[in-house]
Amino acid sequence: MGLPLPKISLHDFLAWENEQPDKHEYYRGEVFAMVGARRSHGRVIMNLGRRLSERLDGSPCQAFAESMKIQIADDTILYPDIFVTCDKADLATDMIFRAPVLVIEVLSPSTQAYDRSRKFALYRRLESLREYVLVDPDTRRVEALRRSADGQWVFHDMSEDDALALPCLGFAVPLAQVFDGVDPPAG
Image (cartoon, rainbow, N blue to C red):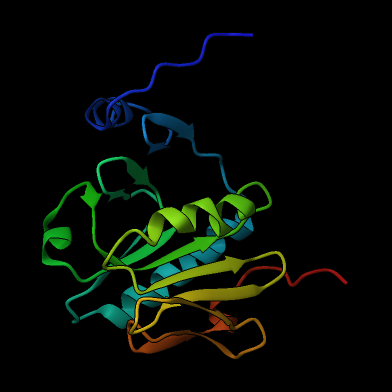
């Protein structure tokens, strides 16, 4: 049995991670390597990123995909697949965002449990966050957790709907566009 790796500070992590060819997430001193994605995963991210960017043109909000960091408090750095922020400080930053209103995670078999549980628990610490959306390209399930006016998170399953509704932004994206170029599930 090897010795446990020493925990590092957020400052040291950011300095180290900016020099790495691969992405890593950070939680309370521990570093986690991000795994590569499949074609269907990348296709859904591109589809959603394009549709969100088109709809947000001319608004005070912007969409970002994959390579941008979100900092949660002083102990967590995550890379969401897609997020939208309307925060002036976020829109002026080069690297670290802190106030997304929407986070979308595109699920894969290796990350699904993490995205549904611990990652959501981390993201919901953000006061700015209004919606957390999970998209599964394999099953075409689309689910959202939305913060209600009283601060409670409410589950919404849009898998059988015609569109991915995004009330926090005031529009929807047709599911046909979300899954464009992705093979339908077998069976």
